[in-house]
Structures are given as structure tokens and as C-alpha cells.
Image (cartoon, rainbow, N blue to C red; front, side, top):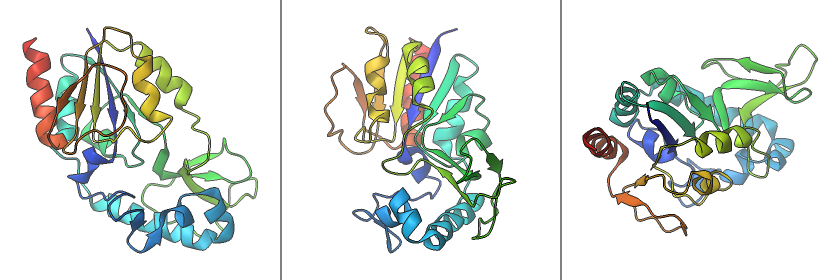
Amino acid sequence: MQHLVVLTGAGISAESGIKTFRDQDGLWENYDVMEVASYEGWLKNPGLVLQFYNERRKQLELALPNAGHLGLVKLEKHFKVSIITQNVDNLHERAGIKNVLHLHGELTKARSTKDSSSIINIGYKDINLGDKCPKGGQLRPHIVWFGEAVPAMDEAIEIAARADIFVVIGTSLNVYPAAGLLDYAPPKVPIYLIDPNPITSSIRRKYEFINEKAGKGVEIISNILLNN
């Protein structure tokens, strides 16, 4: 069974109503991105940061997987599917995908500011000031903020290196280190990019571009892969 590696970004969740940081030129619902998605922002105003992610969690609870997510589940019948996602939502898992690696953390988890290995499943509950881990550290969102290391990157590279087919869905490929994963795919692996917008980043690999939103794009790529 061939190994299908899929790198997903905000575009695959957009059809479920999940907004992105880039919707309004770096502002998202009156929040400055760096105020709510950086460690400096956390130190400056942790209450604001917690409020921001509490709101995102409430939004996620109401969202549902869309045709893009569900289409990838169907491909599991024919391929070994590994999802590497830049998204912090759980829509891939709720759709039924078995193998999902989150590069940038998970919205439904919290972690300790005193012990980064202390990670707690909180579902859609709020995190408030004063909520602490057993060691007494304030809980923060389990999110990789701008400027922080990406702990899952080594595992993502290993997955990319084992790809037989590589598909990228709904990401501009401008966010590193995730955008560099294409470089680790074996040389002759076919690469497909699905996005409704032109790809403006510099890509050193040969690829086929499918100029569609995620739902329609997954339908197209499924037909291509299953008829090859």
C-alpha cells in the first residue's frame, strides 16, 4: 500500500468556518496576531491570550469537518495516509483520520508553563488565570507561537521522507519550517498542491497545481490517484 503524505494548512478548515490569522492582513477579529500568538504577548497580557484561545475553542466546538477532511478519510481505504497539519483544530480527527501529526499544537489541549511535558486534554473548556498544573505552573494553550521551536518537526521530516505521494492542501507554503517539508520527500515522488489562490512561494520541486478549494480539490486528487 502506497504511503500518501498530506500537509494541510488553514485552507482545509476554512470551509468549516475556521478563520485564519491572515484573513484581515494580520488582524483577526480585532486582535493583533503578535499580541496573542507570541511568548512576548503571553508575558505582556496572559489574560488576553487566554481569552483569545477560549474564543477559538468555542468556535471549534461548533465547527464540523467538511468535504476536504472527509475525502481524505475515504483515501485511507486505498493508501496509508499520514496527515501533517499546521492547523490547531481537531477536524481531521473528528472526520476519522487515524494518523495526524500537529506541527503547531492543539487547541483542545493545555500545557504547563513550568513543565512543558505536562500536557492536559481540556476539550472545549476555557483556560483561566489561576488554572495550574499539578506542579503549580499556570496552564497556557498548547500552541506553538511565533518564534517558538516546533517540537514535532523531526517526526514530520521522517514522515515526509517515507512518502510515495505528497499532497499539500490549503497552505501558502510561506510558513517555515513546515514549508520546507517538501524538500525531504524522495526525489521522484509526485507532488500535488491544492489551493484556490496562486502559489507565490518559491518551490524547488516539480509539482502539479490544482486551483481549487479543499473540498473540490480533494475530490479531484482522489480521482487522479485512484485512476493511476
